Amino acid sequence: MTKVNVTATRKAAGTVKKVALVIATIGAVTSFGTQVGLLVSWHMAQVFAIGVAATVDLLAVCAMIALTIPGFPARDRKIVGTVLFFALTASIGANITAGLRESVGAAIGHSWPVVAYMGAELIAGRIRNFLAKIEATENANVPTTSTPILPATVEAIVPTVAAVAPRVAATVSHATSAAVKMGSHAGHDHPATPAGRAACRKAMLTA
Image 1: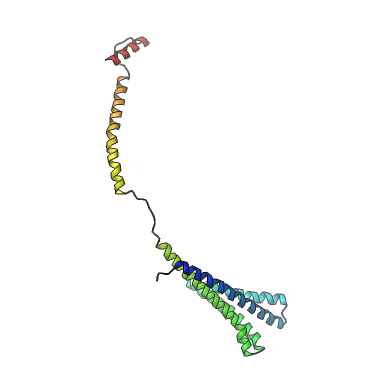
Image 2: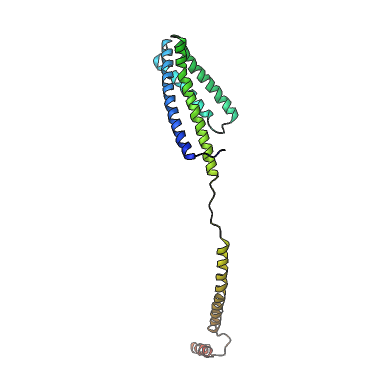
């Protein structure tokens, strides 16, 4: 993929989505009004006419958004595409029928909002997919940070350990000798009394 300016692309994508939302809102409202008027003229109760018209355009928008999802399975895309086809056929057909009561030009004019808001949603969906791809590429190119032990650090540690080891060994040896010297006096010939043991220890210390 060609390297792009992610910040500029985000700004452009945000602008496109806002414009697409305005187009979709205008198109859906005008198409909805035309369909309601047509259904009421066919002697349908207004509450039902509103419900039917709303479901037609909302179903088309729902299917269009679903088709822009990245990685959407091919089999499911066919099903959603079929739903979108019937929803658009119903919406455009109703608008053309309502327009033909006046003229061919009116029929084209009434059907155009449906085409416009579907096209706007398609553009916004393609922009979202493109932005997601370049952001994923950007995140994949970010290097991971780590703090390995450098060879210089290891080389600095080894002499320190070598210098400390003799001191530790000397300390341990001194402590051991003292423990032996101050240790038990078992086996020495002296009375088994506190005074005898004390005299034996004194003799060992002065030896």
